[in-house]
Length: 429
Image (cartoon, rainbow, N blue to C red; front, side, top):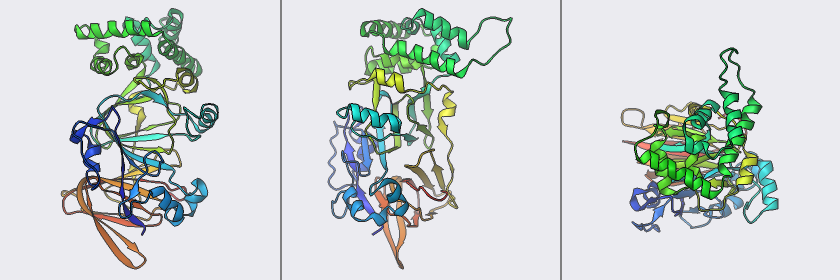
């Protein structure tokens, strides 16, 4: 069979939403083996072959990775030639109640070196680019703020400025916001700006814990007294929330360094290697290259590797609006968006069928494997095995694997929303 139902893995981390409030628990409830604990956090639904939490075939209970390895035709020759007999991506649903760590993922060269030097911490040699698509309204950090915004915060937020060496602060502000009216405006040298951001960020992240605690405590106390300045109005509530979750943590001060990205349902961001980010709240579809490599530095009880993080970041800066991914059309499909990041390991399709629009969508055959999940509604999927037409019902939470070279059609009488991750290294999606 080229199309078959999966039992997804469930991960329960402290930051996940609780009980039936979690979409992860809601989706997992389609599995007959899942038993809901109303007090338990359900953070992630895993769809893939990662050994930490592999999906299983619903009809046999066999690990998906084992099944694929013994049936390489499900992957297709281009994929096995490029990635071997395994999926190169991991597909997830995340239900975020509490902020995840401020982190970055290494590029392939750094991942190989970190794995060689510290295999107990960095457990594989692969990179981990990620893409997040919002299911519900989402908030996160993504990339550095424009340099003028950082410079302004250094001027007007004394608690933030207290953690940055005075010479570094003065030099950075002069670089990005020259005060002389006798000189024409000149765009600062990009490399100097990156160096300046690195010095400012490094000063904050490497500050002694006692000094960080003093700065964060003073900041939050001022905000709770209602003394936030106008330029702080957009970050005040988030700072209070982060401090409530991680009291006196240096990550709270990243509101003055990193872009706060807000996504509505269907909007997406792509998180490239060596770029700082954090998920703060919301429900998302996440797709990533298969890896566990994470370098953390704030908002976490886990190991923080600040020196590695400081050395690996690109220190590029741009507005939050430029972090968004713009979806494309997918071939001849009428109700499907294609999110196509600049990597080989994965792309994602979003199909939305509604009563006011089309109730059927066909996806042409993809020259590689895919996994899809139904996030709303119900319907059927139709495909062919040779000359035989097959179909099976779909409901919210169902996850299916689709083998390479298989055309599928989604049909509903009311509503159906499907996210589908795939890999295809030849041809044009």
